[in-house]
Image (cartoon, rainbow, N blue to C red; front, side, top):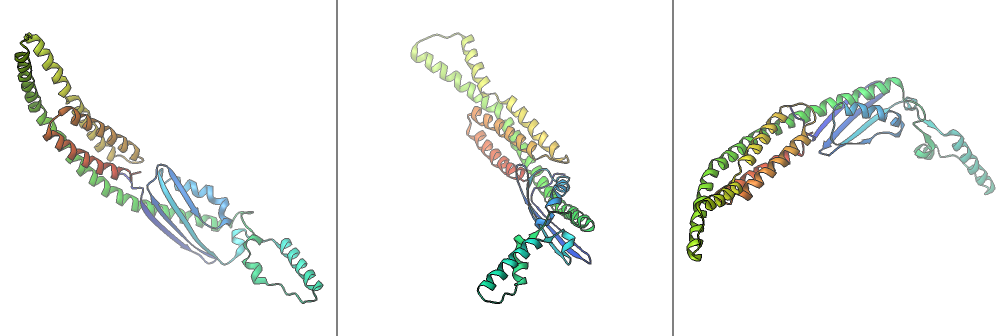
Length: 293
């Protein structure tokens, strides 16, 4: 069953020293494009997070955010740049002394200065790393569940539309023989009128040649055969697992090409109306396919 590229997933894990919440939102995209929003102290784990994500998806734009709260800074491998802080305090003390003022360091100001903190220089706590990976895996599973539910609804809708397309193609096929006979009869009358007006003579064989040329131009049997095969393939691909969106899109393009040729060759108002209906329905299929992985 196909999966939609649009979905949402969430997972939460709470322990004594930390709590974390993963959230995932995705929309359609040509390739897998992940945007990570998480603490800089976890950059060393990003490659492993990426591997987990790629086991669940191949295409789509995914926004992934991590809300992490810890009670111990050492769990993240975060360290205060103490030499830098001490140097700054020393300089401020010297300045205050020269100005004849008393200096008391503002520790709250130091705490809020993110550039004084070093992160990512060491691995996060192993237990926390394990919890983060498990949380992401759980979020991916929840995300895939929502994508699969939507994918099934889309597949059901596409199958219904394919049935409509098959009915329209069959209607076109049924009308083609009558149109060809009408065009042949009109051509014979036209040739006879021209011959009478010009007082010229044309052999019966020549007439048959002209009729054969017209018949070849009007014949869309090959296009309808290929069109039926494309619609059949669409049904088959929809029953597969994995990445099928690009193949579905290609088959829709090929079906559009064949039906467009049918409309151009038939030269009949009724058939042209059916072709327009077919194209409109096929365009709805293409819109759905754009969101299938």
